[in-house]
Image (cartoon, rainbow, N blue to C red; front, side):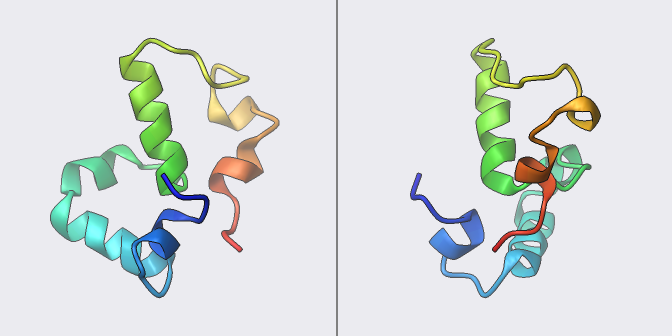
Length: 75
């Protein structure tokens, strides 16, 4: 819940290591995140979908004006 990227909050050197961790320990979640959405965005989206709370501006990521926020490079 901190303000940084999840890999930073976990003390990992980068997103590559977070993706490897997810692939190794949470394979089903890694598979579900097929579009390689940033992990915090992905988790929040999953929680909102379960709670039936609409958070997305568009019905599909490809058409969303915030695409680069969710899928862009992490700085």
